[in-house]
Amino acid sequence: MADLSIDFAGIKSPNPFWLASAPPTNTGEQIMRAFDAGWGGAVWKTLGEPVVDTSSRFGAIEVGGQRMVGFNNIELITDRPLEVNLREIREAKRRYPRHAVIVSLMVETQDDWRTIIQQVEDTGADALELNFGCPHGMCERGMGSAVGQEPEVLKTVAGWAVESASIPVLVKLTPNIGDILEPGVAAVEAGAHGLSLINTIKSITGVDLDRMVPYPVVGERSTNGGYCGPAVKPIALHMVAALARDPRVTIPISGIGGISTWRDAAEFIALGASSVQVCTAVMHRGFRIVEDLCDGLSHFLDSKGMRSVAELRGKALGAYVEWGDLDLSYKVSAHVDPAKCIGCELCLVACRDASVDAIHTGPVPLAAGHVAATRDQAIARAAGSGVHVTWVDETACTGCNLCSHLCPVPGCITMKDVTGGKPFESWNDRIAKGTHKAGHHG
Image (cartoon, rainbow, N blue to C red; front, side, top):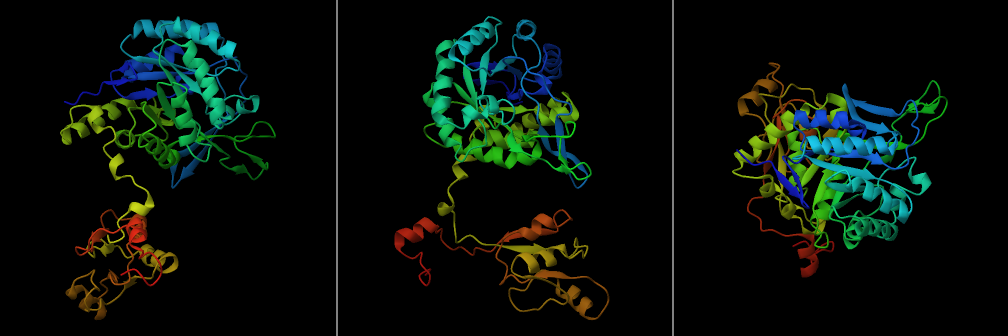
């Protein structure tokens, strides 16, 4: 059985699954129950000057009957006294010495950072996470994403923390920025021991059209909040991978953003994350999901002959390149399995209205390249026997694979390789050879 334990910048954890700094890590009682359930670590909800939160504070998006595909919050940092949090951190670490206890922090001045870091270190916590990502409420006060969006400011403030701390310092980055490399590299230059990302995305999830107030409604007003949940996973994967493949980023990364299943976690790790943090999925289904996360990842590693999480880390990074380095000779074409086709014609409409009109129904021309159903089915359809035939004109298909994504029947539309042995050629290759201009594609 694969070893799920990790060492993240000297932070030991029995598995890579950590709770993100959020409502599920608001109290020691919650975190200790999470450890009992099997979580390897937890990042304590951000400490600082306690705040007063609003009511209500959450909003969500439902897609196709699936609840909380996207989740929004306007909640801020801890609303509990610092001394209470410190006492509970000490107790949690005393009772669970093998689990990772990381404490998220957000304060203003250098003296504030020095003081609170010393107080947290005295609890026996394993590490600190600097919250430079909160996109609402705190940023208006010059903290959170207001720091994360200014690389030089981030570098200065992170430097204060690193100078004051004797335990690892992680920097949590905001996605509300043009280039994630800028704050990420600044954190490395400041001496940070690890990165966490992404924090939530600045957002409004919708509008109550009866009251004409955005969600979540607070009396007769609302504000922008932080967007998270499964819908943000693609953004998070890109930003994690962008940092992980940059040679200037020499510290480990904790991946955050829409992780709900072991497959999500495996994808983050394959793109360079050393640990993963989960929040929305726990708010949706509770702490017990960690059992499936651990079992699924363990079985996956076993199936690939990998003995540890470390062997998976970064496995997919080599295949992540810039557009100009992709193989322009590679070609796929859609193939419809007539035995599975239900005749909904979603693919036909999408291809006709949004692509190249390469999908058709009815008798299948027997000319070369027009293949997707058997000759017998084509004859039966032409004879009016009612057999539905959907077929693809392979000569017109560009391989965009839109049809395969919207087909409601699993395995009905697949993409087959029709490259035909053509040699690799990228756009950058064409530029180097001078064949990239119109009429010179050779």
